[in-house]
Image (tube, rainbow, N blue to C red):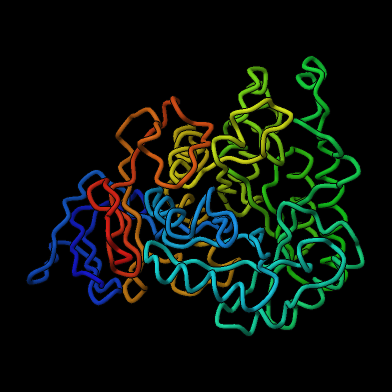
Length: 433
């Protein structure tokens, strides 16, 4: 049930101080000295108001892998991180390659209540790369799917990729590609480079990502369709996206928080929390993706939140699963890597973590902090220092690379469709009852 709230003295997008009135699930008024009879008043002096964060790349694992995460636990984690909407990747069991499965995911999100869950449909049946999934049926289902991806697997067949790009044009869809040439990465354990050579681990070369991106932007240009590049991670990939945009190709790209901050030097300790796909790259790549995000070449930050049970990480490096949880830490990592370094302002954070993800995913009602918009709001305290600990995690898995690391800031309020899911820095319980 939506609440009547007056957020007092908050810095809108990190700039001017104002009051925000939330009433009947919408932003009713923005100004100074505002009040409403019976409203809950929130003293937000010194805090930053952002449009509710939107994650275009989340693994919720349900149905099929509930030991790792469920829609309920994953959206609780999302709310704790300031997110009001998440796009759920299709690598579930069964795979989200039909109208029935995406509608099930949508219903689970509605029942949980912590964040809007927008399903992503698989590009191919079973994510096997052999034939197109029911793209049209998913698009016309109650879930209204507009983003399709085989994430975790590259759509490596160029003809299937072309057909997918052609198909989604009819309903303004987008193909989100996991750019990884499978032949160039067979047996890969980490980034190919000096560290992999010293450790004797099979390398994941940058060209395996860059070659697929180069092929796909040309395919998107050829058919006149929209392409989105998932978790871009190399300097060369940034250069290709920059070239494609100058050429007028309809391509967008994302970077993860961990690729903005962490490098392959961390693999030296063989801590499987740092094992991820695409792998952590060189310092030069980190600096390049930061620059790409700052200059608009990279459109968004997406978490690639990938929970795993402890036994899938507490093992030898070669046997460990790829992936990191990232919903609770994402805003704090972006603060550290991009805002504290002067590369982005809070207005830019709103663009790359809310407005642009909602636009790319064609998700109505998100990404705006203005009168008349649905009340999806994140209120963040940038002044609080702290160590990231397991107490900050609210999902079923704890495979975070940031445990024990100093990260700035804290989400104080998350408001989803007028209802507080985080209040005074504490996750609200019982929303699903």
